[in-house]
Amino acid sequence: MLRSLTVSLCQRAQPLICLTSRYCSSIPAENKLTVNALYNLSVDVSKIRKLKAWVLHHHPAYVMETAALLRDLGASRPVVARVLELHPEAILCRPEHLEAQKELWMSVCASQRDLVGIIEKFPASFFTSPCHLDSQRANVIFFQSLGLNKRIVAKLMASAPQSFSRSVKQNQEMIKTLQKTYLELGGNETSLKVWLQKLLSQNPYMLMKPPEALQNNLMFLQDRGFTSIELLQLLSKLKGFVTEVQPESMGLSLGYSQKILGCTETELRQIVLKCPALLYYSVPILADRFEGLLSAGISLQQIMGTPTVMELTTQIVQYRIQKLRTHGYDIRTGSLDVLSGTKKDFEISFGKLYPRRERPLFNPVAPLRTDE
Image (cartoon, rainbow, N blue to C red):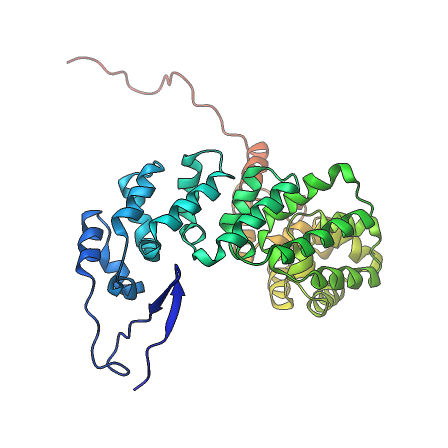
């Protein structure tokens, strides 16, 4: 018979509960105190049994203490229940650790209300292991020393908690690489902090990448003829794509796009500057989107003029073209600017082309209501 594996959580060995008789002859009984406490908080225990049943078998558990901390922060009863359903491991964290977490998070949150909002969306970021607390504190101090505002630091902690759980030295290396690269490409000290804030807020997971990934990708783009100014422009597109892709995949995507468009290297670089998505979309995705546009009667020349249309999925393109067509707009001869952009951008452009008529205050055709 296989021995039960263990994982650590909140400085305690956490047994993985065997849920089938294949490896275990019996299943440990649920902690009745835990189950009853969760029921009293209106938590849907069936959800926990389905996804994380092992939590219900653990001794000790701190259900009421965890709920009390959330209520003290201002969380409503439904929010408390929702958090415990989504992340039941929270009840295994010792109260003293949760108090330490509360103190740490309040150093970067503007209010307790903001913290409750973060916990509701990212419970795993708040209910972490105590062994990460020192690293979290060190990283908070480091990012604040960069001049980043509290909102940005809180967003980083919430959306990329792994970057705060690891050594601060690793984050320092990546930040130094970003700063050095920005300045070497022609950026100035005055705008460095704002640029860094935007970059990290758009892609916090950039911190988890090795600095070499950024350097290798920039070297690849330099070899393709991009100037320092153009590289800085790409780096400032705020999506952090320069660490999410690899030279090999970029080479394939660029080669495919150039072949389809039949453009020169110089023309291709200008298209990429308008639509960096061409760098990180895979060849199958590019093929599907080119085919969708061309089958709708859109020309390659139109795509080259408004390459941002490539950021839209084929389904979205088809929907927007159909909506425009029903109002007599021929996308084959018109501008693609009305087609591209976010949903909001499209609705604004559509509204300018076809403004809604205001409803008259009085309709002379409508029958008058009279008292019988």
